[in-house]
Length: 466
Ligand SMILES: [Zn+2]
Picture 1 (cartoon, helix red, strand yellow):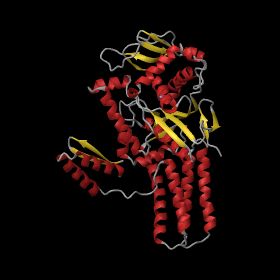
Picture 2 (cartoon, rainbow, N blue to C red):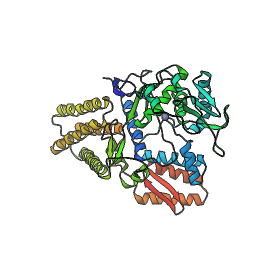
Picture 3 (cartoon, rainbow, N blue to C red):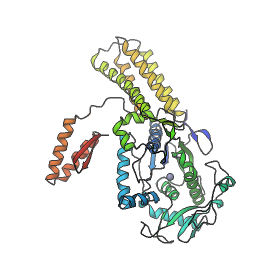
Picture 4 (tube, rainbow, N blue to C red):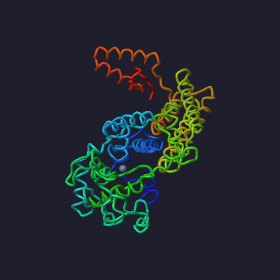
């Protein structure tokens, strides 16, 4: 059976057919790193991490690229407000992004390209578009000639006429047509900038993803993903830029995740209801946050509040209890076989059901229901006094399997004790005092591997579990 996924481009569920047998090229738009991420940003990070994990589970070799927008208006503004340089602000929030999404069980991408490190490719991309007459320079800015690209609007399913109604030329813009969008922005006095044949400036937002997807994955990619809010104009413009340049399809499948509401209200600046992941993971078990996020199909809207997170935590703990009981029985009981083939078949049936739900456009909501059924079944099995090691192992294997796809571990980790951590920190302090920085770094890494993050503050070292 093939994996089916809902393609925004065709508005249909389609069978997944990779460009190259057994391989998947996947690009997911990453954040603009001017602040900590909020849970709206965490959703694509988590759900597309599961898409990646599931594709890997089904045997695909996935190349996963996710960018960082490390220069743009928001960053320039934030740097000014903080009295810092743009690269320093970006660096800090890239670190924080890795830390926060790492706590949520998101695997790192194969590459996390940054705009500022791909400036040559971006400039070359724009130059090539100008050469093909799809773009033009105007007083130091460069714009994309939208109407020249036939099929503009095909991703977000809007006609050029509809789009025309909603567009106008903004103050200070020097476009030929209201629908044209920025590829290169001339720098204002004192702004961070790069040299180009059109003068000092920086790229517009959309062009970076076209240039970086091409550089890291090639002209045509399998899956392009991001939040629903990115479909227009960001992804529409990416399609136009890339297809205008290459003449080939940019991405075969477009996946978009739904919105997050906070207590049934839209998350917005004006309502002041932004929930930062950085804060949330201090209040709630990060695994429960992830589990909660996956309890709703990725395309549907999800409502967030603390009670819902708590109930996700309760559910997760119930499954962990089951797995613990299975392991306990496995270690402490005799191997008394009873109806082994029948039970094996039963447990195997759960794999098939799990796979068929995940094959159906990555339906994690239903997959999680099956997980709870499996847990119930396992408890039923444990109620009997005679259990076979083989069946117990099979149950545990199922939980581990499903857990690896969802990115949640159902076993209680034998974590480092607080005393052990304090002792290691003590040792690290000593090493630093003696200027033995390699030992100090080694300890930091050792702790990190155990899921412990250190933070050096003026009040001393603080630590937390990832
Ligand atoms: Zn993008």
